[in-house]
Image 1 (cartoon, rainbow, N blue to C red):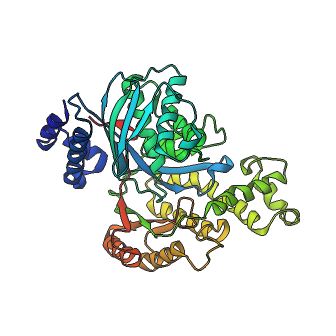
Image 2: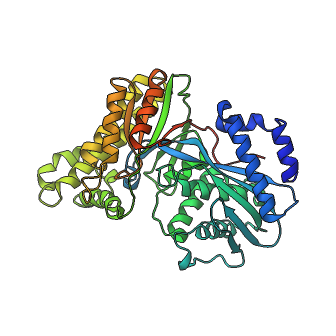
Image 3: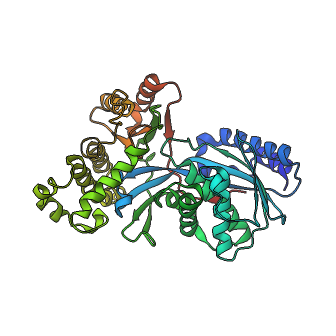
Length: 425
């Protein structure tokens, strides 16, 4: 089925069931148009009349466990209905040619899978790194042409880079490896690629959630083989909406802010002769507070206290979701948000204290929500996005308030996606 044949079948409803599974019924028309445009663009780019395949990998939203993963703690996150898709044809040229919407084409010769320092921070590094990891386990990659378009917002905390890594991993695994690697190994390959080839020292959470799909509980006590559990909860049936709002803060010059969080937590752990807080019993930490103040900053101690609280909160949120106890779940979300604001202190950068878009967004969120729903900082913090769980009856009011504050289209309504990285067609 080439691109033209696919478009014909798409418009005749042949793939409606699969698209509804990924995006929901209310998004069917929009997604069919998106897939049609992607297939048409692919054909124009590559003039390739071969059979096409289409793959998808979702973005993710952190639900609980703010800055706990780097301390070998626990997190709860979920895949969302914003994704990256790729229209692909395969060949035996041992070359990957890939163009993402709005960018120039990437060309990767698979005869050279070494790390290229000049590719750090670029898409080419992700392609080369993912191919290298599959080659390492004995997979012979022939090559492919691909056109990629993504709805995963860059800089939003929804993990656009992880979605891309999982997308490429799924393409290679499904076609050249009979799907033998599977979601967890693809996630690990993605993390390795981002760390070593791309040059970003990320954890494993983002790739795991994108690859596995649904609500994902992860315990990072053993970072090589973390405990991964998939859970389900239908917010729509519970009358609840998930919103992410982009507060339009700049991420420039925030590297030191992000680094300071794990660094300061590690200084506390070091006072007990340990590398990470997961190794230090909570009771020992609180018992030694007077001593800790002699060698650690107050902020480091407060950030460690946040770790203990939010790490314990993760399992409580999982239990609440499993029991469909939505009121308890929302209470815990608010607790997590308050802990991030007061103890973790990642709502704004102390280098730019006059710019507090996240704090402002949370203030307005609390006014609109009243005693209903919940809100918190989303992702790494300091700039970027906030998360809110909003009951049906005030969903429109909340969205309007956020768009009025930060600009039309700043507030996104998301759905939890049960499917991770997948071959759609």
